[in-house]
Length: 255
Image 1 (cartoon, one colour):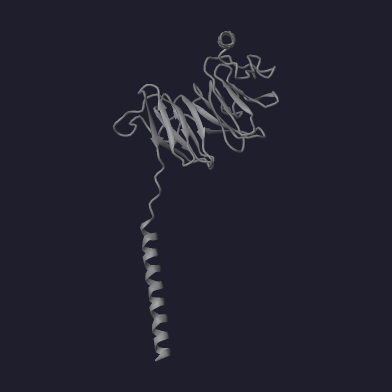
Image 2 (tube, one colour):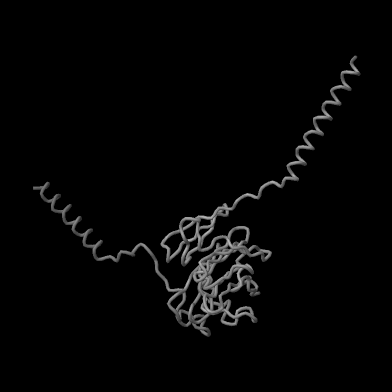
């Protein structure tokens, strides 16, 4: 009888646990909080469009772009919301359809303007806004409909051009270089580049929405100039001559 009671109790416990699991939402292990809505910072509107992007820095500040309201916001861990850029861009170059967003270790924020401004901006923590690339690209290869943006530990910025089927690297000093175009790796095409990411070694990764693929772009070490090689040979020969001279002097002194 005691064994029967224990078995009934065990069955009831299992049934109760199962019922509790079924009654609980699947996301019960997470705390979910809305951090911004369409009212933005209370003055400037946000989430006016379908396409937005989000980034977060090491301090827990969140950055969000809005494609339709042409702006971006910063949300601190305590919930303070501040608009960091709007449609006026840097005051000379407008920001239209704010799309991709990234932030570096120094809390500089980078935002792309998809269309028709075809550009990207850097926003410093003090609020200084600078356009870092526009539709002219690197001066030879154009940038059309920039979407994704990423930044590495050295402060190099990477931007994809959806319409121009390419991507650019922008150094902290402002040197702009196209790092991939529609030819992809020479065999597989790059069409409609969308996402971009960069790792600690400086390898860049780009996904393409129209060609349904992704690429890895590895930095190639600069070759040692021929003149430097010749210098090393001359230095080595000079050191050998010095060693030989010292050895001969030592033999003469001992003889």
